[in-house]
Length: 586
Ligand code: F6R
View 1 (cartoon, protein in one colour):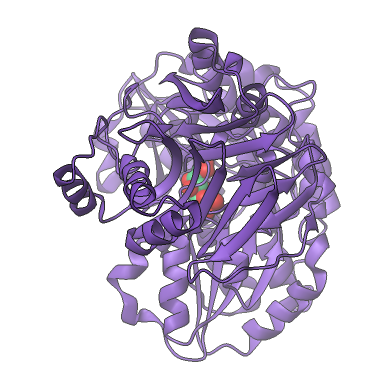
View 2 (tube, helix red, strand yellow):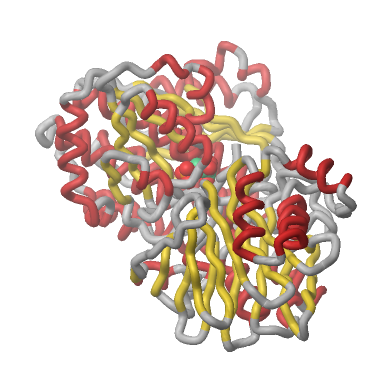
């Protein structure tokens, strides 16, 4: 959730760190801080706000020193305050740390350390790492031993980077990502390659239960049993260079606009895995599919596709719910796990539970270096490039593309899938935003939006409402059209907007009937359809396409609508409040 970064090299650390934090801001952005080692002391600056704001107020990038650490926070323990922002110095100030994850036994450790005279200032679980390191360092006066003793006492999931009073940079990892960059004139440690990709493409992926010590004499990696570890240096894909906004005002609109390219490119990097996965699926006893948020909405679409075209039943389960029905999984079954980041804690937990029941895992992932890929039998890459906007857009349509490809393969081409035609239709929608921008203006002061769809369009209605919530902060709800008269109709009045996902297919006339029932209660109707109707107050025209592929086409106008409504409301579409791109905590 949070992003952490460290640098040790020949250049001044703070500007490099601030730039890296800006690039990783999608991971968490309620407060920011930097600590550097300069003139034999550790200097810390931090504040509440996003990277640009805090840097402007606190001049983070003016800190001196060639060793430093930095952090953007997504609060879990303790409110969003200056004191709770990272880095956290130890009580003597000789060590400072930044942390991503959760220390489960922080309360016990804090009590013990307080009894030993170590002082705490914040309400965070993270500060315990700084004081625990300090305690062990005070005892043994050796960094490696202090780290070993510290990690042996910490419980939970974490990645932390620490800077010591002698300018040594260290980091440790347990179930949270940590990547080392090997540059020409310095070392980087970061939660994400994006934190340093402009400086080097040579990286080492630290494994779980490993820590690293970097100083002027070089870099040493050890496991938690103190054994030295050798790692291959890997070159990261050039695709990371795409992580710039270019001519676009925001990443979100850039990523929405990329869909005509990303959809046909989907899974091109993992064609063999796709073939293998379809073979596995054909022979599975039972098939499950899981994900969180947008990825779960894609899982719901899969349910329709698999049953209609492949004649295979697939059971969707929300990842965070799996722990409450652990007995659900049967032997010789397959769980398909959908995740853009491959790091969502809920998804990883669901997969772990399934694996323990003997289930094989097929993951559909964008970040092929993620934890989910490592624990899957087969991993299929979305191949849609980095998605920086916190709200999932292009990764959703790429997830759909993989699922459509799978089903089309299983049913022997019965969908007649032509993703380049899908792209052309999306390009048509993207070629003129003016109508959608106009409608977005009307949503500015609206308090409730309902999105209705029937059949396969219901998961699209859910996904549409998720985009509206995230980007506009307007209450939005996706409903199956037929459920309207069983309750939600009571909410319809002249202050309400209802979006009807209403393509001209077998759901068309029933959805139009629902629209009429709503209209007479005074609510305003936005129809997303390839067929006009007098019942719509606003019509967003979508191109006519083969009935099977409407879901690709109908989500794009809502992505645009949510984006432009966010602009109207002056919220930041890339970094919605309270959210983070990769939800690595439960
Ligand atoms: C919605 C959104 C979230 C994610 C969810 C799962 O726009 O971004 O709901 O879809 O947190 O994330 P991944 O797919 O990375 O597991």
